[in-house]
Each structure stands twice: as C-alpha cells, then as structure tokens.
Amino acid sequence: MAPAVAEHLSVPSWAGLAYLISGVLFILALRGLSSPTSSRRGNRFGMIGMLIAVVTTLILHGTGLIEIAIAIAIGGAIGFVTAKRIAMTDMPQLVAAFHSLVGMAAVLVAVAAYLNPAAFGILDPATGEILRVSRIEMGLGVAIGAITFSGSVIAFLKLNGNMGGKPIMLPGRHVINIGLLAAILGLVAYFLTDQSPTVFFVITALSFVIGFLLIIPIGGADMPVVVSMLNSYSGWAAAAMGFTLHNSAMIITGALVGSSGAILSYIMCKAMNRSFISVIAGGFGGDTASAGGGSAVDRPWKRGSAEDAAFLMKQAEQVIIVPGYGMAVAQAQHALREMGDLLKKEGVKVKYAIHPVAGRMPGHMNVLLAEANVPYDEVFELEDINGEFAQTDVAFVIGANDVTNPAAKTDKTSPIYGMPVLDVEKAKTVLFIKRSMGGVGYAGVDNDVFYMDNTMMLLADAKKMVDDIVKAIAH
Image (cartoon, rainbow, N blue to C red; front, side):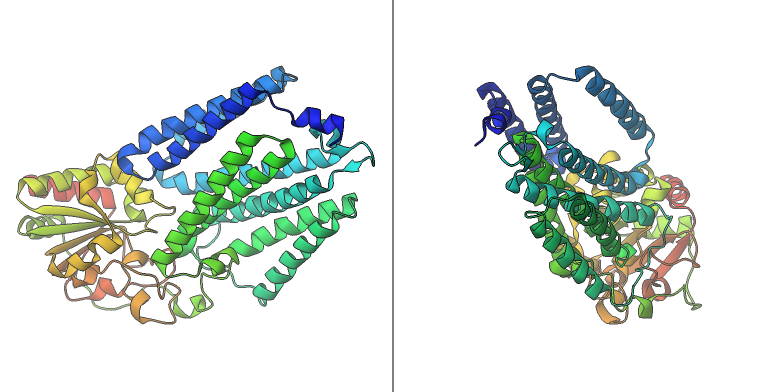
C-alpha cells in the first residue's frame, strides 16, 4: 500500500477501542429498542455510543474544528427545535425527512471524495487516479444515497398529504426500473476503468430517478414498510461512505442500521403477506389498486352516541380496543387510557390490539400508547389477539380503517388484498369511531364493517368522542 494511503488509514489503538465500545453500545441500543420496557435504556446506549464515536472522530481529525462546531451547533439547534415542536402524528414524515438527509449526506460525501480524493486518502500516487476499490465504494455509496434521498422525499410527500396515498402506476414501470438498475450497476462497474465526471454524475442522476420511481407506485396502506425499507437504505449508504472515509464506527453503525432495517422490513412483509422482493423492487402497492378503490358507498348503517357506547362497554366482560391513525391525529391516546382505566374499575377486561402497520410507521401505535402510560401487558400484536375477537363483547375501533377491513380477505381487486387484518367484525358488537361516513382509509377503499348489523358508528373527532364516553362511564 502506498505510504500516503497507509498513513491515512492508520488509527491509534485508543481510537479503535473507542469505536469498538461505540459499536457494542449500538448493538445494546438495538436490543433495548426491541421491547417497550427497555426502549428508554436502549436510546441512552445509542446516544452514548454516538457521542463517543463523534468525539473520537473529531479528535482524530483535529483540523477545521471551529467550522465543524458551528455546523454541529446549527444542526443541533434545528434538530432540538424540530423535536420539541413535532407532534407524534407527524413523526412518520419526520423520520422520512431524516432518511432523506442521511441519503443526501452520503451523496455529498461521495461527491467531495470524487472531487478531492487526496484529502480522503483514496488517491493512488503511482497513477494519480482514485483507488479502484474506492471507486466501487464511492459508486455504490452515491447510488444508495441518491435512491434513499429521492425515495424518502416521495415518502415524506405521501405521508404529509402533499401527494395522494393511492399508488401511481407508470406504464412499464418494472421494465423501466430493471433497466435503470442494470444501467446503474453497469456504470458502477465501468467506473473502475473510467473515472470521468460523466460516468460518476450519470450514476448519481440515474439513482435519484430510480429512487423516485421505486416509491411512487407504493400505496398508503404499505407506507410503514416503505419507512422501514428506507431506513435500511440509509444505513447501507452510511456504511458505504464509512469505507470511503475509512471510519470503522460509521461502517459499524451503517451496517447495523441497514441490516436491522432490512430485517424489520422482512418481518413486516410477512405480517402483511407481501413479497420482500417486490418491496425492494417497488412493485407492491398493487397492480389491482385501481380496481378496488373508491369513495364510501351509500348503504344503510347505524349511528350511536357516547352514552350508547358507555352502556355497552360497562356491560361487557371484555373490550378490545383497536387504535389507528385517526387516534393519533386526534391525540386521543390519553383519553383512551382513561377510558380503559374506568372500564377496568367496572370489572371489564381491557386489551389493546395493534396491527403491524397501524399508523404510518412501524410501532407507531405502540409508541402512542406507551406515551399515554398504557400498561405493556395489555397491548397485543395481531397474531396474539386475533383469535379472541370471536369471544369478545365489544371491539372498540378508534380511527383504524384499512387494518380492520375484511376486504383484505375476500376482495381480490382490493389494493389491500392479502394483508392480514384484525377480525373486529367477529366481535358481538363493534363500536367504530370515525369523523364521517364520507371518507375512506388511506388505501382509498371503503370498509364493509361500517355497514354490518353488529356495528355502531360513532361519528365525531376521536378525542371528543372518547372524552364524552369517559364522562358517560363515570356517571
């Protein structure tokens, strides 16, 4: 290895140990985040690990510390203000926005390394060209980063309501995507023999385009998997840039985020009966999506009041509460917990049923319920509670639509067909809180549960309705 490169790659033993400690703390953070009871501890481990990694890197590269400090201060201030102001309902789009920043950071690092390879220690002094192995790292890093950025921007726009939740199907999209992917991989391989700016920036441009094309066909009901998938992409982009920067902490962190995000995406795909390969290819969200959608149907339905709901639940032996995005929008989780506490005082057994994709990102409902101090042992995942609905007196659905829609089991033209759903219709009585009968779920399909004989619709803002039910139960 050339002396200049070897010098750049050499890391003091103390720094290697510090990065190793950071890596262990990141692993402990992921383990802690696997359970609500240990999630706070996991977050602390992750924060400490990142602090060690950042401080170590700053000490190793002691130049430009004033500029770096200014950048950290600006970014930290923006992050702090954003975190304080952001509502929990907007957390999914915030996560998507953060993913886009990670992707763009990877692109900018790759561009900087390409324009000034000597500063990054990736210039071969014998030939005056970028090291061949670094070209591979750089090409893959800029490609994954660009895909992450543009894909995350589209995810943000969909989650934020700036774009519709329905899939946007381009003619021949699979052929286009495969062709673009083949072109990107071919250009990355060609980059080994020709490091001209044209090749590098064409790779970057095509990657931005394919990131856009991969996400627009994905429908609203599948957005939680998209968020998880983009999280994985951002990790792999960071890992690739870690190789370019010769930073082992960045490689470890990126690999952990990338692999954990991929595993979570796979688990969620299994929970939704989706193909993992089709997620990666941007092909799900439905070739049949246009066939099954539409506005609410004019059919007979029954309307109830807060007093009706309170009476039915006070007489019940068991109530299963099914929260959805409507609960998050109304910020009704605290009132919901109060309702549950009152029902338990009346001798009613209360459980919460969480669908894997309820909300807009993985674990969205779990976080909201934890924020309201709902006991962890009352919260159950779909596979653990679905069999209980048939023996349940009341299923109380608050702002959840697609995840309770039986069309997913019967209607092959529906965009949510094949997705496991909560069998709320099997309960003796279904109390369904919804703002109005005019709207449909995020996937754009009506729900037959609204019109069933055992369903009573409670039309109102979710928090106001639950508050009224709490008052009725208390009296």
